[in-house]
Amino acid sequence: MDHRPLFLVTDPSGFEVCYQINPWMQPTAWRADPAACRAQAKASAAALKLALIAAGAEVETLEGVRGLPDLVFPANAAVVLDGRVLVARFRHPERQGEEAVFRSAFLKLKRRGKIREVIDLPEHLFHEGAGDAIWDAVRGHFWGGYGQRSSEGALGVIREVFGQEVVPLQLASPRFYHLDTCFCPLSGGEVLYYPPAFTEDALAAIRARVAPEHRIEASDAEAAAFCVNAVNIDRKVIMARAPESLRTTLAERGYQLVEINLDPFILSGGAAYCMTLRLDRASRPAAAMAAE
Ligand code: ARG
Image (tube, rainbow, N blue to C red):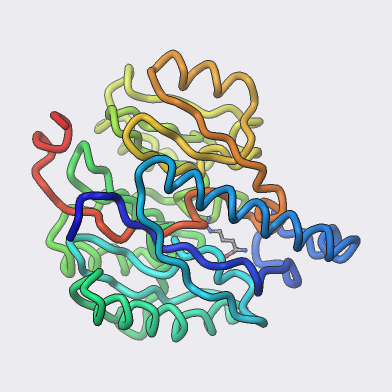
């Protein structure tokens, strides 16, 4: 495999907001002007792809499918580490049709040598992929969200399949239904997170593992702008348009913010991180990662 970060994204041709499975979704706003929303979605997705490439990444693009609008959120398709892909199982029937599409995309990527193995989750469990299992490259473990979309029992499967520790984080609010809406580890060891999204136990787990100087607490406005749902490549942090407060915080810590208008996708409850799936994550020793 080459050394550029590798991401999967989905072409937004099949995207729309036509049902509501999270509190942010606004089918009425989409229906008010579908043509304008579609045009902006196309521009937004193109800008995101360019930003990934400008940050040094390689991008694989999956075709959109009519009738599967949330296919544009491939973060939910699988958990990926060391070339192994654990395919998701969606909680809501509205998204279950995506499983077969993503699975066949992964098998194609395997044939092309981009990933090594495609693994299925046991039948009785739900898990919504990298949206709820975030690899912390500095600390060398997964953070596992559960309690809204993903089953707690799926965390043990992730532990087994990848042979890595998974720190469970119970999500307390339907507004922050995937871990990636409220939790983002950064390359320098900081973690950007939104405390009200978590139970007390989850907050204790975060605070036990992330030193105070590495904790960046997002404000209500920053979380509601979907800025915690960010893609971090080295010192670049790609996200939806951010409040000034977050620009300042991240600049002070030496990060370069890349802001993109992702409004049409926010109407579906998603933004930069969940519009991508990183395929090249490797479980190298934490020390080696931190020294990079
Ligand atoms: N409409 C999608 C859903 O509710 C949005 C998914 C966003 N993904 C994410 N990982 N936050 O499932």
